[in-house]
Length: 317
Ligand code: ACO
Image 1: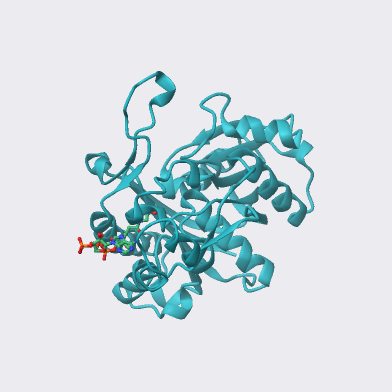
Image 2: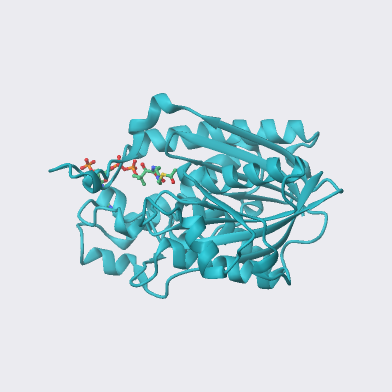
């Protein structure tokens, strides 16, 4: 058994924070942020939660697939910024959707989380355990970002993206590659143990930007090439590279390294910033809604993030 993406959906909180707004908050400039990251604005949640954004994205994915929540058998939420430890976000989404039949759990692989969730669903569906699934990446990173740290606060945004998949006989997912390197965990971390009563702990996201940059530009091309090889395809066969949206400079470096034109790398990081696990499914939904994705197109999805973690898959749309 294989699986097919039958519907996509996304949700962004209404409030937009521009680089100009950030100029009033930390010592930075619109020009510096654009030049180093390509980011112009991001959406910031005022009332939305990881669970509420995930619910909205799932509702839209179900609508797009002409399905109702009652038939959903599996819900996987990828998030690294859940507002509650228990119950997991996927169970909250189940309750909101009234998807009573579904088995629900979260995965945390930071910015690779959506891809890890997708591969987990693939394993369940291809083994015949379930016939369909919702996989959603949802983040409210604005709650774990230090708004006084100009090195990180300019990068992140909030949002959620979801796909609804169904088991099928035809081969739509051609290959998956995943990897983790726990020895580099300190490069990108967030140590919020305030919940456990720890005093004076730094509870915000901290990042060694240069190390993340080096990791992403080295590892992503390697794992995309490995995924293409497994699928018996080459870079020239790919219609679009739908990558984690961390930074435009990273996308440009990757496009050069693998020898594929930048026009094959759609992006929205300029409008929405880095939404971690939500980045890939939100971009996928935007492309789907615009009608850019045609049947039979070959897509490479690839992500990288804290852990460190990385992954890629090749999909025939
Ligand atoms: N505005 C103005 N100046 C700034 C800002 C800012 N927002 N942030 C840092 N600076 C200053 C620094 O203080 C430093 O000043 P100094 O030379 O006087 O010490 C100077 O700019 C250069 O700082 P660097 O951190 O070396 O800047 P760099 O060119 O590396 O760019 C960036 C920083 C954009 C974060 C880069 O390292 C990068 O793209 N890293 C990849 C990380 C990334 O995209 N992470 C996303 C999250 S992780 C993920 O999604 C997996």
